[in-house]
Image 1 (cartoon, chains in turn green, brown):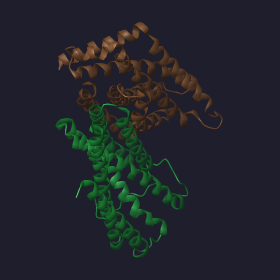
Image 2 (cartoon, one colour):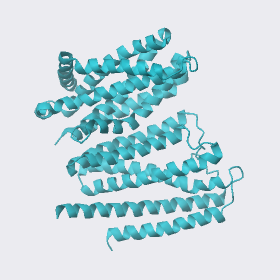
Image 3 (cartoon, chains in turn cyan, purple):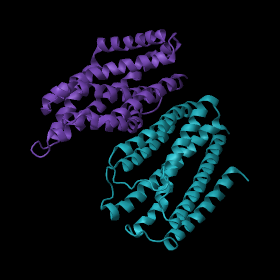
Image 4 (tube, one colour):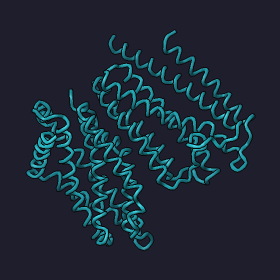
Length: 221
Length: 226
């Protein structure tokens, strides 16, 4: 089975399980006492946010190794990861306001976390634009790697500014130094969703990787 | 190390000499700064918004725009007559080349800022007398950070299409962390608050400078080699 097919199957399984996440979140997980049904978006929003950031870190790591090893597979992976990261960042930026309107009373606020996610999104857009703007593929890969590494180092700074700013955004309740302060059933739904998003990330990236491989063959032929 | 700095100085001196002889870019950048400050003056209602509330933003948006003008020309001028190729075959190490460009850019931006700051004080009647020294320190700290990233990126985009536009798009996300910190510290200073309130932001600025100056020095050679 080719990578393209594997990726397609993974994505299909991921999407089917995503429907399962909806089912579980809506029907089998208790409604949060203060936020009501709006809190359900949490099960999509946070896993997408985690993978949006992870994707950038993976772009950065692949870029570091690309600059030393010059292995085109690393560059293809970085490009794929950046595209998928862009999509996940877009998911975060659309699900966030859906929750913000009923809870905060506004779609958007210049809060540190929102701003930093928006910046991450712009970083991805810039990265993809740079890839497009260079004609020579080898040169483009090298330039993209330089930007990818800088992007990876920017992520912690974005995070630091989150802790310096006063923020409206809920503080992390699972990924924090102390134990998760989430009731068991909610935590299970969330972890299930995180697993599904991981599967979707792998599925999307392998499809995208396979596509760029096909495109390269096409260009050579 | 000394050799590295000496070579960097040679590159910087070449750029600055070129700049000094033509003066077009520096004069344009200074006039641009004055114009942006003028435009900001019409963008606020002085009876409704006090200058302390808007001052830091005005100052930093102006400086950011002016810096981007400077950064765009840093490698653009090396494209003429394939001057960049000449630089690359000269016995100057890549790191020295980067540091030289960084020094020249810093000097360029510093000139623009040293005209921009008095104009800002004059136009908006901001009392800076007591905090001048720390304010200059913050400006230096933030400028070093974003000029370091900007110098790297200006080398990154020269061989791309729409280089000027792309530089701005790539650079702005990287400018935001130092910009946020600089605006916050400036606001504390102009508001007469003690500097100790802004220690977190100063640390952020210092960390940003250290990380990105080192990173850019390491990555620069990957941007210029063919």
